[in-house]
Amino acid sequence: MIRARITGTGSYVPEKILTNKDFEKYLDTTDEWIVARTGIRERHIAAEGENTSDLCLKAARNAIDMAGIKAEDIDLIVVATITGDYPWPATACIVQNKLGAKQCGAYDISAACSGFIYALSNAVAQIESGTIKRALVIGAETLSRIVDYNDRNTCLLFGDAAGAVVLEAREGERGILSSHLHSDGSYFELLGQPAFGTAVTPTEEIVRDRGYFLTMQGNEVFKVAVKMLAEVAQEAVEANGMTVDDIDLLIPHQANIRILEATAKRMKLPSEKVYINVDRFGNTSAATIPLALDEANRAGKLKENDLLVLNAFGGGFTWAATCLRW
Ligand code: ACO
Image (cartoon, rainbow, N blue to C red; front, side):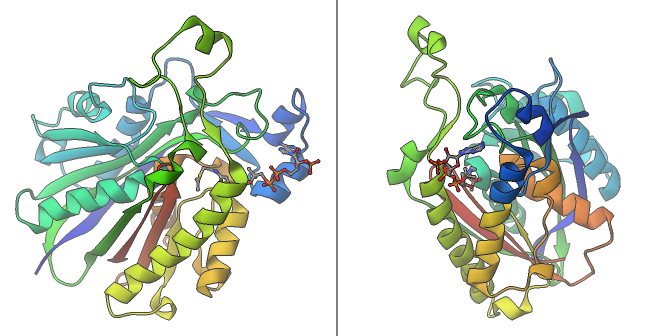
């Protein structure tokens, strides 16, 4: 059987670090509050002129090097992002050009924090059907560009990063086993960026009132996120005839520590089986999972044939999980 297997991982975070102490200097908040409520200690922020496509490129090159392929071998580039360089054309096209990938397919997927799993599932389907042999899947964000740094309810949570994987067609049991995608658009107003799409176009008033930033109702997001993250991870293992006990490592979307701990508790999964790096990077939306996967991989924490589950929840609402044999 042909499966899509991850043959290379890569990631990149910008150099500049914003710590909780930096927020203490000008916001009514404390390091203690931020750590207790979110688990986040620092996040990386893109430099001026450093765009999502630049982050993608660095993560992609690392993944391509690990896979031992050339950019021109890639048949498809999918970028999961809600902070693309432009509304259109797709950031994936900019990456295709900068990488020198030969006129391959390239498009973006918008599913907020679930975006990487949506993008992965999309590329996997094309590999399994025999349409393509190799794909580059990237999750990347420069959320710092859409965060209001005067809003203490949101600005502490987010960071910038990119993570990438090379997927290749391989025979055998190792590779992506299944992906499970869900959404409920009735919640669309609880988390998002109200302007500037085509529904709310730029006006002087919106710019003056700072109405173009990310908005979020944190409490509501929290409740639904924990339930759906646990349910979709369970759905993924059960779809493959396994149970939560079979999971070697859960690599969840890094939203905040309380969501991660509550999800693990709901799943009855021991904390040592949950990968956590939210303390160092914050919530980087579509980038959290490939960034964590690359970190775990390069640290030698992933063993051949390990059962990994990736799960995510984000604006839309969207939620998703992938089960894979490493
Ligand atoms: N510093 C100090 N105090 C604060 C801050 C701050 N930055 N922000 C809020 N407070 C205060 C509030 O004013 C409130 O004070 P009060 O009790 O006197 O009224 C108190 O702290 C509690 O406020 P809540 O908003 O109820 O705080 P909560 O415990 O819900 O924590 C948080 C807020 C961290 C945003 C939480 O709701 C959360 O984690 N939500 C999930 C949101 C999330 O992760 N979103 C990311 C995108 S979605 C995703 O990735 C899954």
